[in-house]
Length: 128
Image 1 (cartoon, one colour):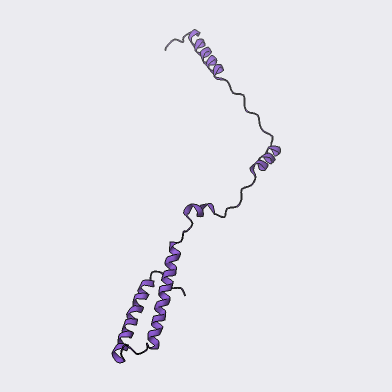
Image 2 (tube, rainbow, N blue to C red):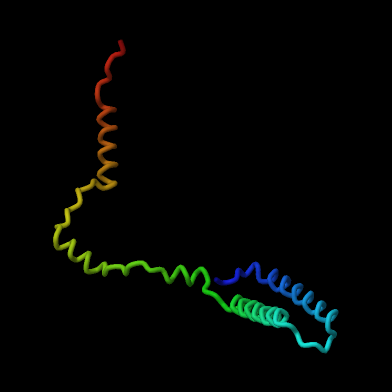
């Protein structure tokens, strides 16, 4: 099971304390010239491995990573269909409808002027 990154410093610290206790107990019992015990050599090896793992993780963290833009570009969406081919097929299948005839601006103004003129000339109805 991999070691969590957050616990790496605590593990190295705990290992160093245990190693220090083992070295001090060796110094008290036999002196400085005595060889390290199996427990002490195991602690030394574990500390070396922990420091190597920490250095490896730090080097990996310093490497460049893909930016948000790179990840956005590399999505796995299906490829778009060729729109020109699809458009031609739909045009062949359905005939285009002709637009309704619209009155021009001039025709609208002429019609409005005629209505105003007719209203002016018509006889006025008496008020009740």
